[in-house]
Length: 433
Ligand SMILES: Cc1ncc(COP(=O)(O)O)c(C=O)c1O
Image (cartoon, rainbow, N blue to C red; front, side, top):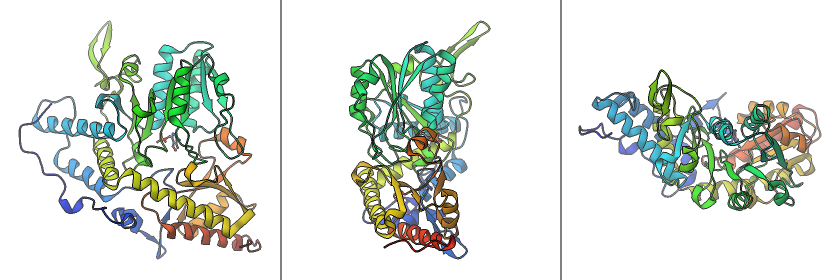
């Protein structure tokens, strides 16, 4: 649909990002990060969980809501056409961000979890049967495990697992054997616990050589790296807006057009049909086929604004900034705490993304996170929705600190200082320096 009337102008220019020079100044674009608690600044180190939102995204959503909000794909009046155009423009932006072949290969979902369920339950429901093999890895998030367990229960598929090396990499020694006869190889591009960045293109190639589909959980990868799903030669990829400066409530499934065409709908209802009769229905073409009901309209606008924002910064710069912080964090924690801190995952910062999961002395991760919170350092403690991995690590929980483009060395220093205070509070001797 197109509109012929004049449109409300875009948000004023001074709301737009000028990040030409200094990545450090980015913090100021995130209103929440200016917040103080008990008169002290906040150190938000939980972006692998969910990211903060720049003013650019907040105002794009606000602007759309106050000037252009209307139903999409349904009503014929101009305002509705305008909202539909904006929604589809957001889809096109997200598609370009991951270099999808065309915008219709992007399905808006509730989040990455729903995207992976569409693949497992809808594609898998139509194409997998008893005894068919799906290969997973021990570093998967529950979002890329439980949907396949559901399929194992429902359809009798067999799950195989790639083990890990001691430094938190995939142990690919038996890959060919594990892939032998597999129909699907589903793996994360980057671990949400270890930070390990996997060789996605190689894994996709191995899957295809074995005749399997390559399903990439790209939830931790897309927010922090230049992503090119075509260069990966993947078949499906899933990611979430809320981890990449966009709003919660929306995510994306990218799939090859012919695979999405061959996948039955996930949910039924309005918006996803071409026809409904008393004796059945005809689904709408992709992507509407997978977008039953009223979609997250304002959230899609925010998602589009988030990718504009990230493009404005430049994903190479985001990645380089995070890598520097990772190296700094590894050095700082090792220098200050030596053997008293056990960091999981690769020790080389070039092999991992912007997060560290660790155990500190004999303190329970929840205690550590509570003490850190008293210093306004926000980290996650727990199993990180990766219980099989936790069993491999021999830990019930870890502390995970994760950073993004808005973090700086002060945040890492604040965490290290707060770890010192944890030792004091629990009456432990000062760690060796
Ligand atoms: C690797 C990975 N996959 C999938 C998910 C699920 O994302 P969401 O909760 O947005 O669906 C997460 C969330 O932490 C994740 O880290």
